[in-house]
Length: 422
Image (cartoon, rainbow, N blue to C red; front, top):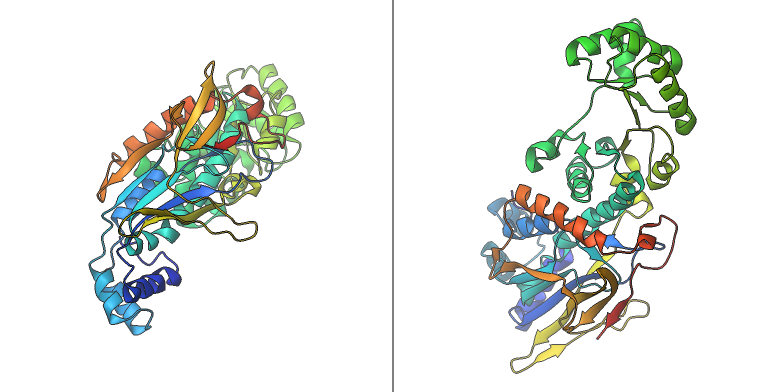
C-alpha cells in the first residue's frame, strides 16, 4: 500500500520550488530530535523505527495519486514527472528501537538529496511521534506494574490503525499481551480477552451468562464480576467452576479495597488459585497505587493510547547540513524558542559502573554508541517486522537497566541524565 499521500502539501510544493531553483538534488542531512522531554518525564523511548523504514520503502506515488495531484493542481507537470519516479535512495541511521532518548537526542538521521529527503518528513514524524509517545507512557506503566501481567486494551479509544501501532509500542516496552487481533496477526503479539458487561446483560441472569462463558471457554476463563453485586458474582463464579475459575475481573469502584475484599472471599471459598485482574481507566499512577493490593494483572486502555497526558513525543525534522559543491555547510534555524544546532551529529551514552551518567551529542568518542545503520542506499538494514519487534523489546530491557533507580520514579523530575553537546 502506498503511503505517499500521508504527507502535508507543503512537502510537495517545496519539491516543486526546489526543482525550479535547481536545488532539488543538493545533498542534505536532516535530523529528527525532540528539543526536550515532555514536562516532568525523566526519559523517553524510541519506538516506530522499523515502521518508519517500512514506510520509506513503500513511499511511491501510484497513478491514482498522481492523477489526484494533477487534477487539484497541487504541483506542476515537472514535479509530477519527478514524483512518478520517486524512490528514496539515500541513507538513514538512528537510535535502535527500544533505546532511550532525551532532549536533543539525534534519534534519526536522513541523508539524501533535498527533494528525496524532505518529502519523507511528515510520514516519519507521524510514526515516530505517536509510537514513541505510547512507548514512553507504556514503559512507565510497565515499571509501576513490576512483574505483574500487563495487557494493552486501548483499541476502542483511538483510530483503528493507531490501535495496532499502540499495541506494538506497548509490547515493545514489556507489555505481555494486547486485545487487538490485527496486532497479534501482524506482529505476533499474544492476544487476550473474554467478555464485556454486554455479554452479562444479554442473558436473563448473571448466573446464566457465567454458565455460558464457562461452557464455551472453560474454567480458565476470566469472569467479569462487577455488573451487579461483586460478592454474589464471585460466589457464583466459584460455585459454577467448582472453585477453579481462572480469574475474576474488576472494572469499577475502589479497586484497591475491592481487590482486597475479593481476594479474601476467594480464599475463604477455597479458590486460592483464582487470580484477580483489574481494568477501569488505569494509568501508571493508579497501577502504582495498586502495588500493595492483591492484584495479578492489569488491563490498560485510554491512558496508554493517548500517551498518558503526552500524546506526542515532540519530535521535529530539521535540515542541519547541505553540500554546496565544495564543502558541507552546517545550517540551523535561530527562531525564538525554536533554535537548533547545525551539523550532522553522532551520539553516545557514557556509563559509569554500568549506569548511564550522561549523553554526549556531537562527535563523541567515549561511551556506548547509540546510532546504527537503518537504511543504506535506499535498502533497509532491518529484518522482518516480527524479528525487529522482538529485537527492540530485548534492547529496551538492556537500555532501561542502565538507568538509576531514581529515573524510574513516577513523580515529575528532571531528565534521568543530562545531554551534553561536545
